[in-house]
Amino acid sequence: MSNRQRHGKLIVFEGTDGTGKTTQRDLLGRYLQGIGYQVVITKEPTNGPYGMQIRDLYSNRNKYSREEELELFLADRRQHVNDLLLPNLLFDKIILCDRYYFSTAAYQGALGLNPEAIIALNDFAPEPDLVLLFQAHLDIGLTRITAGRKETPNNFEQREFLEKVAAIFAAIKRPYIRKIDASGTVDDVHRLVVGHALELLQPALAATMD
Image (cartoon, rainbow, N blue to C red):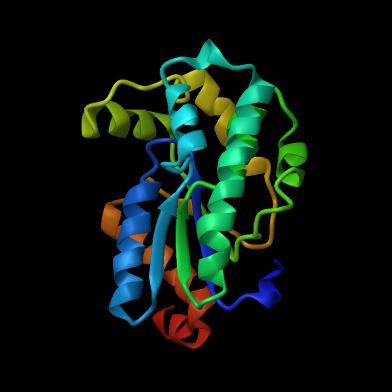
């Protein structure tokens, strides 16, 4: 489905772990609902059968080859697209998605696969209207994971691996990608996010906020 064939909008939150994507997705969702938009909050991996297999990789990374991992991500996304994304885009919904195929390109690319080839395999998935790429020094992200969330970094959250992931994210070029400095306070980052969202949804209103 091309962007011209649908009435809703797809806003994607991307970046390495610990950059605050999920927090900002939820804050934007509440903001947009408050000004009258119908908002759908979602994420990848999903909670479906393929998504649960992917979550098993967080602690058991050697269970699948990198190619088998990629197939799981693609299968999960196909189900997500058919069951949630396409139906809601047809009915004027604003979809806020925590991770999408750019994460697959970056994380599987960090394992040695070709990032642009991975993106090409997702030609069945609707193209985002806006991608917010959250960027922060890895020390900030890892501190948020360990001190903020009180979690132990999983297999996808190791420093050397995340350095490769961040480099791939930074190298992906699309006209709808907006880079977000995620090192500031939650409120500071939220203002940046709202500004970019309004540029997409209400350009006239966004201009008055500059």
